[in-house]
Length: 226
Image (cartoon, rainbow, N blue to C red; front, side, top):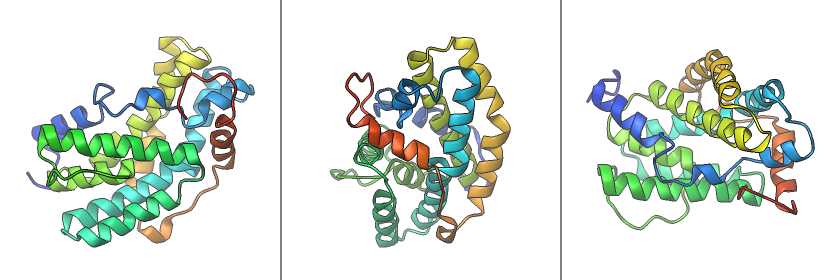
């Protein structure tokens, strides 16, 4: 499979790996959204869209896009030590205990399941692994193009947050899909920008989402792990 063109096989794998049915426990994480609903910041479709757009453009969305791009290139070149360094950087950038749990639990589950089902790696036991790095390594090993991987990954992140909002706000299913549709142009542009990025482009200011993830750790009644 060419790493420059997304053929049917690559599309099929991206759809499988980043589907809600892929068993990484994404449904149990809200990325701090549960606190934002609790304190009234997110209360309808418009505020939900604004919250998610902020995460994508200024918070973890951009950060993880940059890290994914760097990890994809490193894995594609077979530079295993450098890949581990990018993974360590990704974990160090987690701004709270819960956000670290969010990325490592999903990353380890993704790498374990992808390896067992799709043969994406050597199959050794996985410890802590950032989710974006795990997806990048699998895509690179299978020759799935970088920009397509970024687009699918960022869409999955946004869709999972919308799914959480449908349960928390609550939003109707149609309102949830209106939010997903409204984010299409932003996610596409973000994927294109991240595909051209280097680690020098890391940075963001999604402080409210970071604080929400910290507040969530002490929230009295919770539906989500993070």
